[in-house]
Length: 453
Image (cartoon, rainbow, N blue to C red; front, side, top):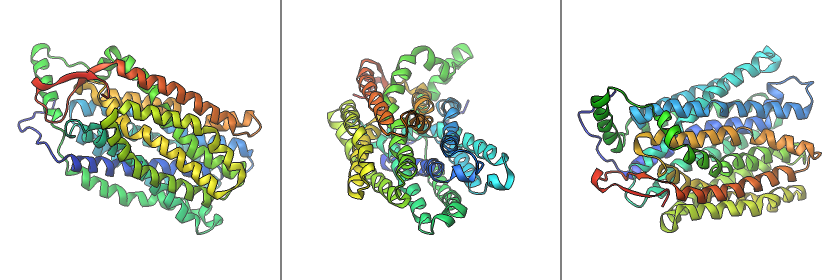
């Protein structure tokens, strides 16, 4: 156990928020680069040319899905380190892991060069990405939330979520840029450039994160651990305590997050695959539309988080989920028209309502667990949800569509059902009470309040 002789000094909440944003942006850039490449080129690059098209598409998305299998493991391992040692150290480790794996993907040989070894290497690196991102999100959220001023946790917590928007914007922008070199160049070497370029971003992120102080909450955690050690000589594993005392919060949190995670990939990766594969729409047109949608998400998410601090984070999330229910069918219906204006408008509308899910959710989950198991608790909820819903969303969407002869409506209806369940679970979270610790709040002033209140 780490010996603390000097307490962590409270640091600027904006500096902490920026550090959370910088790191998550880079990690999500790497993650979305894989998702975009899986939709556009991995089927041809890493699988046999004579494999049926639908099977290659499913296999390509399966390589994307396997990264989600180890995300809960990453959440448990790095959650333990984060709850016992500190938030900062985990964030440096996860960023390095993700950066190295992504750079290596850009150097991989193709199926034509090494045969079956190509997809095996791709899957191995994808698994490393999964472990890294599994530990990233929880730490980034807590660096921002635990340094936030009282009553502003939703706003500052949204900066970690903004990393998803920035990463998506950078990723789709990078692929759109490489697509300008033409389809042949893009499929030959252009797709590698976004992965190789991530090394520059990783260096920037490491500089920002290594200069951080850990959160003041860690001082109370270490003090509590010392007292327990003196009394019993043992310390309960965070994951064991979460599964024993907070399993209901974890379970409800998983379903509350389903649309924000799995739904996102339905309206991005699957939509991209459906538009180019079934409707033969322009790759560049769809990538540009997704880039515009990511930029809109980046702009509106902080304002929706501020709204969450004012009217309640749960209300904002429920409104966003209701919007997803209303827009799920129109999102895909307009694809068949081929109208760039209509396609872009529905992309923007869908991303607007989904932004209402991203901003407030960090603070809602952080409020759901006691500080000494908070990293583990929020990571389990988020990463189990990603494993169950997000990782297999594109594959499931392709499978459902194929059962209906390539129709779009089965994935759209599935998204609506998941969103309705998400509304119930988000409201259910209000019933669970846990101790919430604001950064710098003395122990005597800690209060028990409804989750996300």
